[in-house]
Amino acid sequence: MGERPLKDIGEDASLLIVDDDEPFLKRLARAMEKRGFEVETAGSVAAGTAIATARTPAYAVVDLRLEDGNGLDVVERIRERRADARVVVLTGYGAIATAVAAVKIGATDYLSKPADANDVTAALLASDDEMPPPPENPMSADRVRWEHIQRVYELCDRNVSETARRLNMHRRTLQRILAKRSPK
Image (tube, rainbow, N blue to C red; front, side, top):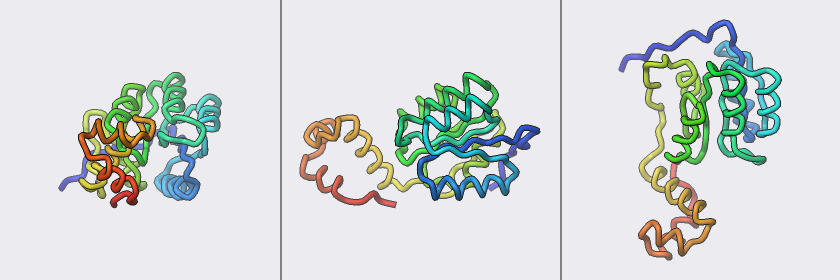
């Protein structure tokens, strides 16, 4: 399989990473610095928005679900201030509707966790006319199913009966699925 062409980082290598998972944030920041980016990190929407306002980066990696709100607020702030910025949205919740919202707001790409530094770099530096390469370790079909059930469950305000009805599933079956850990 041939490698897809990647753009150079360019003159401005500023990269903002916003994620509330501190070990992941530190690991990704170190890996991206090794790849030539000038990294700034933030652990919340408030901190990410402040940095994006003061020093709008050329590149950004933003987690969707943060403790103090939605990462799309940071994406919007970056887009308002710098139209050419390349933004990748990361999330542990691989929902299609959220991906569409992220791209409409101006994200360049959307990656499901666990994404590694290679996936992130490929997404940030992919040529505009090229699709980024497929992830090295995509979610399994079981995991995609589990993510979909979790999303519908959240949208139904964690009401098991309503979720089961919408998924056309028996309530007891849904309860058993919700009681288990997520598949790999």
